[in-house]
Length: 281
Image (cartoon, rainbow, N blue to C red; front, side, top):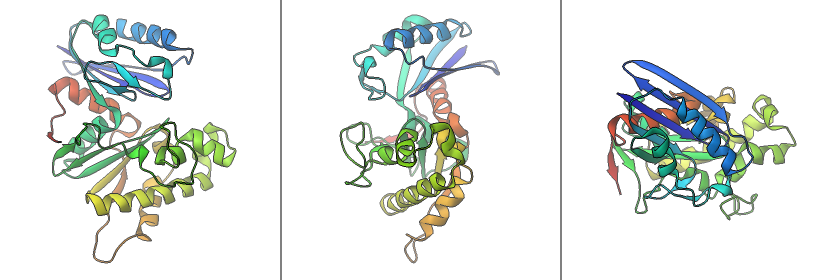
């Protein structure tokens, strides 16, 4: 039996297959030439997957409805309306389950850490998140709770792709930080100014989460989040300035699965047919 995990991100496609203790993996950047070239890459990668897939879990940056169709993806608008479930199922001949990338990352991190109260924050092309509280995956009334990238941090801040101003994502995405600093994206992780700014903003998020849901741990992941040296310690240091006497702040750490927490979460979904956690609505 082969279980398949896909992480469909803003800049890359990551695919992992596991069978009898053996792992096959492939990571490819999107060609950025429109949906047809994206789908050609997707089909090419899936054609190379080991045989015998019985179920696939997909960690999706785009918003995917219950029917498996893409209803929103500001980073790649040409995907709107794409029947992603049908596309993948036709390629692998097995059922496909979807989850939000940040949500599935939170599931994987909570299970790996044996932690019942954990928040995942992923800094990549955008900012994703997921919340596990009292051993429950928090989904909310609409099923999409945990969209931490769209916390409104600064109403006078830069515009976000979602239509608001000053969302966390509009402040901390590499694109936004490049505009703010004038640095090329590949230079951001080596800038002390960037690290200090990111840590200051995330410290406020840590305190907000501590007041709202009191997680015991906050894990920072995503390609960009992992690349910033010493970020968890910086965030913890800055958050102490916002602390409240008698109220313990959560520990901040690098994600157990690093930049691949969402892919790990997709594999949890593929293997279990569910997130493996109780769900709260």
